Image 1 (cartoon, rainbow over the protein chains, first blue to last red):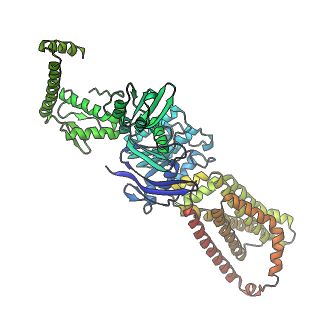
Image 2: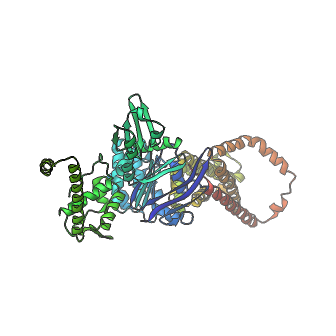
Image 3: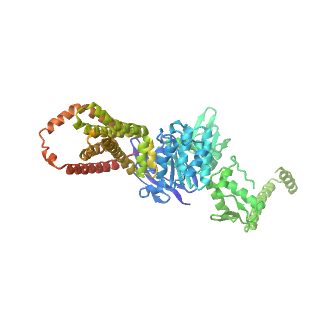
Length: 286
Length: 124
Length: 215
């Protein structure tokens, strides 16, 4: 399986924040979620791979092509949705489109019209009259109307209500079903990813924490709840993180059989992506 | 074909799916030449990742239950069926041997064992 | 591609462009009304119209780009090369100047008192416009919109003090060799210098923008 995006040892420094040796690859045919808390480095990473900000060092490859030498060709094959639109708000949807469309060699006006209709958007409307959700849909319409092979999105769902978020997920599924080769989107709303992601990459403090298939992640981690009495130096090591109250403890672990051997009477549940993410952050701080 | 995935089970998702497909083939719910759903459609319906289904199909192919043709699809292949049925039977035999050994060590007679089995078999 | 980016610049300042064109149209008649000395009417109205329209429109386009700074970021995520995003501003400025020349030329046909269209004056004004674009745009790419705005404000406020100083200093300089040159050489020279200034300035601006980290 080919990688549609391969990032190797990306480094970027800003003032007091830096990306350190960020490396990951997106397999073809997958929806990959890029998770992390605010400030973890998701947006910085996305900006850097799109050459919007300069990297200190590192290698970026799309579709097997080096980004530095094939920038235009690559950008032609990628659809981009940046958080909050990034439009000239006083223009109408049609006018903004007339600026973006000519940049792409495979622009398909019919696809665009179909998306506008599907999203109930009026091309003559001014962009600043759209709600946040409609702006995101418009951004998607623009990104998906030039036969893009890879769709990259930066926090597309933040600030949107559950209905629109679920509509977005449907659109992404349709996109993958009709020739899309991959979706890469960053978010801190992990519940969306529980449903739709195939692969997950987590970043924290500028470092990649893990890259795993979503189902594998959910298969091997467990949430364990039990009596605080049994938490000691040895048992604590088995958990990524624990929370303790007067009534018991709860923790995320990858070593469920060990836990069950050492601690009796525990309740075991499958975690959500959010549980794993939160556990991985605190684990990093230990 | 019925595939039910349990979130409460300890077994990994891909294994659950794989075993249930194998069972369907063994029980002849799926016959030689039947097409399995496309990876993406299957993943969508079961609400699992495409990578998981990909792994299921790959392992099923390795184990001889299906064959896949690039661009066309994945199809049931029963050529290895007897071998596999045999190995499943052997699994049951092995479990029975374990059961008999335990029963003997607890002094449970063959008749008692048989009546226990009658009751438990009905429970499903 | 460049054409679409230039069109973009016009799109984001649509209403202002129409306003400025109207101003270009009305300055000559206005000057004819206000100035009795016919020798200067033509040149004064042309100079004023050119400076007004180019200066103000460029400022306004920069204002809009700054207001919607994220839009250029999105454009950089498309296949549009950053180089063209920069060049479109220069082309924009020059097109405005061109429109100004055209309007003025049309008016000279209507109003003989304006004294016909002076190629020499338009060449010198081209140099002036080139100098303005050549300094304003790189400074803005380097320092950003707000700082540049502040700096130009300071300069404009200080001009009543600076200009007389400059005039005094050049009082001793020898302008005769220049004036003795034939008008066509003067015009060609002005245009040539203008083009060089623009080319150098564009090179600098492109270099700066290509290295910039976008928000």
